[in-house]
Amino acid sequence: MVCLHLQSTYMKQLYRIFSASCSTMSEKDLLICETGGDRQIFAPLRILCFDIETNIPNARTNQFSDPRNDSVIQIGNMVSLYGEKQKPFIRSVFTLGTCESIQGCQVLPFTNEKELLMAWQKFFLEIDPDIVMGYNITQFDIPYLLNRARTLGLAKFSFFGRIQGVPQRLRAGVPHFLTCPGYEGRLLLDIFHHIRERHPGLPGEGAYKLNGVSLHFLGQKKEDISYKQIPALQSGDANTRRHLALYCLKDVYLPLLLLDKLDAFELEVTESQDAHVPFNVMRVWRSLKDVAKRCNGAINHGYVIADKIK
Image (cartoon, rainbow, N blue to C red):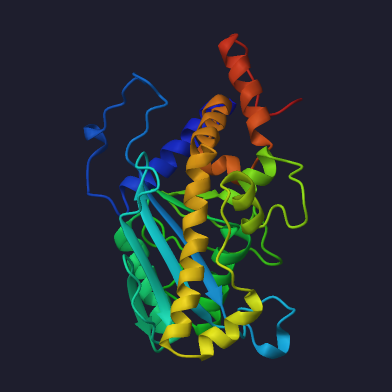
């Protein structure tokens, strides 16, 4: 039966979770409870929003950065709790090279890119976010970090999940929203794809770039820095790298504002609940929501669904 197969798969995954990085316990200690209360009330989930900046050689200013050649020069981060609107309690930026201080933000400079990346991975695990989010992170930031770490030979970098020994793995080819690896035990929310799917037809050129959607929904803009200025800012001094860090941090803060303004998380969860499909599965298998709804309807009407059609 479909439902029995799904239940069996889920229990195997549940066993992996509880037997990995969590405290050791017996299955006899697990109590299965009925759903009660308001399902729309969420726990104070810990949210990590991040953005990376990469080097762009002057000779290739009209091309995208290549993780085989171009360094990750900054990673901006903000951490907040669900329900506490617009109030990140951690603001930090990891910089390659010295950087002047920024009020209300922890600046962490590094002289070596490998040290920067591994320090950020340690920071990520210490924060232990329930939700990881950003703007277009599934098609740029996450794949870029993993490919760059591979180029640098950082074998331990790709372990970000809550299940020990399970790394993020990239599929071959061009990264796509549906093929970007998630984080085991964490929710992954890309605001870019949420807006593109739920708000089609935004007017104007570049309407779905972060600057465009921020102006449309928030009345705010990104920092006034062109990506072509990044090489000069990075190769300058601590003060110019501070300007770049402010640019990076603004790119982190705007998605958090959009998350709140558009009720993005609530809408994604509601869609997942209506389809009876786990949150992360909805991202990588969008068509499953229709199949799941039909299966649930059949179960509610007492029908039996066979695994195979004769």
